[in-house]
Amino acid sequence: MKNLLLKLSLFIPNLIFAHGVSDADKVEMVQGKLFDFFYLGAKHMITGYDHILFLIGVIFFLTKFTDIAKFITAFTIGHSVTLVFATFYEINANYYLIDAVIAFSVIYKGFENLDGFNKWFSIEAPNKTAMVLLFGLIHGFGLSTRLQQIDLGHHGLLSKIISFNAGVEIGQIGALVIAFPLLILLRKQVSNITKITNIALMFIGSLLLIFQLNGFFTTDINPEVIEEKQIEVKVEEPKEREKVDEKSHQHSHGNETHKNHSH
Image (cartoon, rainbow, N blue to C red):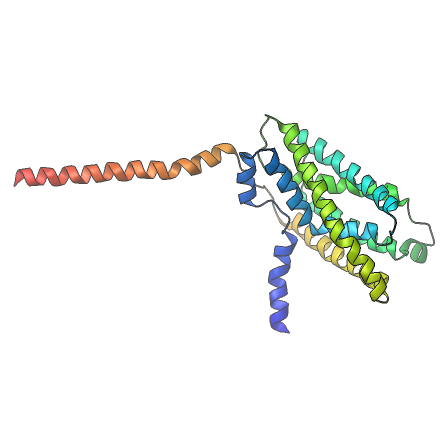
């Protein structure tokens, strides 16, 4: 049991940052084409467990395509607006804080699905579509903070942002295509699935919230932005070393020749 807990303690921090932008992705995107931004957007959404958890909460009770389309459209509009505008105008914030609000959105959806507003506060829950739109704006800002870790440059900036956003949409659709049938199957096969699933959403969301708030209050973040000039330096370094080695070799060879002549 202790070994299991130790493994989980090592695994959970990696899971929490699984949807961050790696240095390899940053380097690839600096000199990447529009498809590379599209790919990164899709990859980030599919591995963005907090986004996926929120969407699971959104579609949990839905069975009609029209209802799914309505809520997903609201979410898409929300995150597209902030993703595009915040990135284009370089509006940034501490991503620990933004991710903490995203974690709260997961808790909120689980609480709402369990009819928590009525049971705990004897009031009706806020309008579902409006809240999905509101949280969509926050999720989009979170996506923007990740994208801004890359030096996008000024050439074709809007096209790059839109390509990334299009990838996010495809990733979102892919995640829903997998999650929705599983939810239908679970609702048929598992008793108390509503309570189990939404309590799990609230629990996981709470863990994420605590972690992100701890990061916000204890970490001095200054994310490194990978720029094109940095890539050029990395590429040129080996060439410079070759020149130095060649000069050293020539110098040593000259000394040997001089010694031979002196003899």
